[in-house]
Every structure is written in structure tokens, then in C-alpha cells.
Length: 254
Image 1 (tube, rainbow, N blue to C red):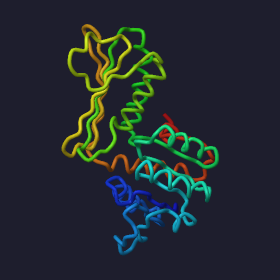
Image 2 (image 1 turned 135 degrees about the vertical axis):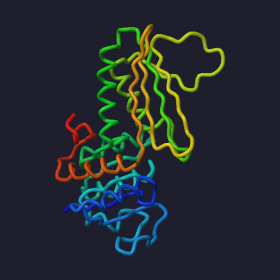
Image 3 (image 1 turned 90 degrees about the vertical axis):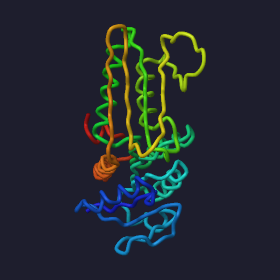
Image 4 (image 1 turned 180 degrees about the horizontal axis):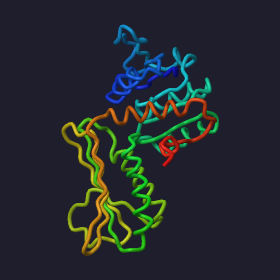
């Protein structure tokens, strides 16, 4: 049995992660935390508290889908009590990301902008295609779409794709929201387009295009359950691991 606390328990993803945990016979929910607490939402579950302080001692792994600030608070309690944390929150600043990396020197930290199997396969395919085509005169474009309540843009998943491309092609620079007379496309630019509308769960398309042909990688999420199940899988995997900075590639062994 794994004792889980959820940080950001009242958000869209937090509630979906909670549902996924309740369906798993190997998981016990010992803590629910959200900035909107304290609140008693569920009769048979712990009260939602504004921080992890009350629950951290009984927790094996924290799953965080809160906010960049909420992640930092959760990280503090995890460090104080040497507890592992799975972070699915996106939109972190450079300083916040640095804090997360430093924390991984003392505790197990798994950070991933997207925990679905399909998206992580997309990451691997982006790595493969960019490596093979980097000197073949292919233009690259990234298009991502999410619901109208999403606060950060581009999405964490799109930023991960951008990081992969930039690592393989260091000369790459990114262009957002083209408008007006912009002239011909430059050799090393990658366009990034963002859509925010309706109830789109998440769509990511990566286009590799040259004269005469085009390759498109596309992932469409139709339910948040796929992300939640990935987070639960990650929490199970992270329990008992040594301090370190992990991602879903480690969990999925891809």
C-alpha cells in the first residue's frame, strides 16, 4: 500500500488524480491539499488543507498538480521530511525550476509536463526526427491547443518539445504569433502557435516540412484520465528511489 497526498486537490487535474487513486487498490489517500482549504469535501477522505504540513509525515509520495507557487510550498515540506514528489504542474519560472533541481539532490523528484504514455512517445519521436532531419532543410512548426481556462502558454508539453529540438539544434530560435510583413522564413526558426478555446483537453502537432513532402506528429488527449493514470504510475515507481531528478522516460523505460 502506498500513502499518497495530493497537492492541488481541488483543481481539474487534482480531482482527476484523486479519482485515479481511488480506483487503485494499492493506494491510500492520506492527504488532500489546496490553496482553497481548509474544506471538508469528501466524507470518507481527509479534509482539504491549505498546505501539506498536517499530512506530510504519513505520506509516502506527494503528487503535485497545483500552481508554480504551490509546487514550491510542497517542495519545502517534502525537503523538510525527506519525501518524494511527483510534479505535473507547469509554468515554472527559471528560478523555480532551479529550486526543483536543487531539491532533487536531497529527495527523489519526478518532473514531467505530461505523464501520458502517448505524449512521451511523441517526445521520443521528436528526438528521432529532429536528429535525422537536422541537416536536411526541413522547416519545423509546433501547434498546441488547450481549453480556455489554461493559464500558461505555450504549454509545458510544447516547451518540452522545444527543449528537445533546441538541444539537438542549438542554433534554433523560436517565433511566436507571426503577424504583419515578416519576410521570408529564416533557416533556423521554429514557429510556435497556441490555441486556447472551449474544452480542449490537449492537442500537440509537430510539423516537419520540406519541398515536396511533410511529416506530422500529432497527439490528441480526449480525457485527463490519461495524465492522471500516468501520475499514479509515476508515484508508484518513485517510492523507494534514491534522491535524483527523474522524468517519465525513467518510469516508462523508453
